[in-house]
Amino acid sequence: MSEQELFGYASAIVVGLVIGLAGGGGSILTVPIFVYVFQIPTVLATTYSLFVVGSTSLVGSVNHIWHRKVDLRVTAAFALPSFVSVYLSRRFLVPALPDPLFQFERFVLSKSEAILYFFAIVMIIAARAMIKNDRPEQGEAADGRPRYGSLALDGLAVGLLTGTIGAGGGFLIVPLLVLLAGLPMPRAVATSVLIIAVNSFVGFMGDIQHTQPDWNFLLPFTGLSIIGIFIGMYSAQFVPPDKLRKGFGWFVLVVAIYMLIREILCRG
Image (cartoon, rainbow, N blue to C red; front, side, top):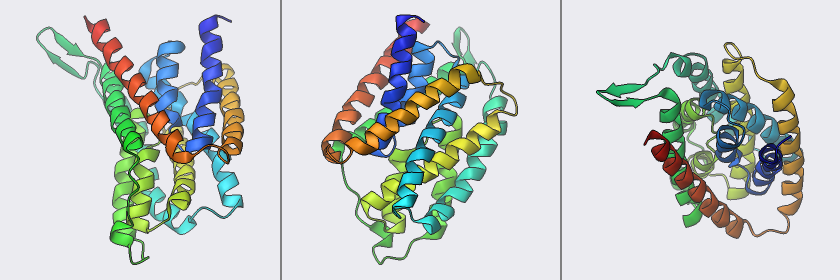
């Protein structure tokens, strides 16, 4: 095993650690690790990301459910429409995208490049949200009554994002649960982890209809990530969450800029 592969497997622990500490963000790391460390094709990397993040988040969500931190009614309202859009996008939309996606004279944009550019932009948006560390107010649900219709519509949109780039969308889900369901921040984070877990698995199920995963690689990587989430959930008691979120935001921003620069230079 090369040093690069060892670094990649060690990074799997970091993925779980981040999910355990921050309640999300793992998918922001997995796709770059698969693409740049293990040299896995972009679309397949998003498939692997869905499985790893889904499995790891599921472990975290079981812990949250056990401690009654998850609002199951709000989860159903948000997640069921999201499941539909994530499955359909992985099963039909992503495979149907043409390759190259866009071509004008000598300029050619492949499907893989487009997904990576889109992923990097989403990372920058997520990083900004984490660095600013703004805590949303209760918004429309200030009266304590969840807006189930709005939750369902936003669930559809988040599912489409998850299906397209293989990211769980936790940085979007948590504020929406606060604004539209009136959940306090800790409960919104716990509920988000369950939504991310099932969302990711549904997307993965849409993929395996036309993909043959390398289980000899995927299962050990996922196992290390699950070890990481146990470390993260334990460490969360001692790490100030605000400082953690801000520090991780800067890290995500650096990775996103690296991805953009690398893709631009490769084109040159």
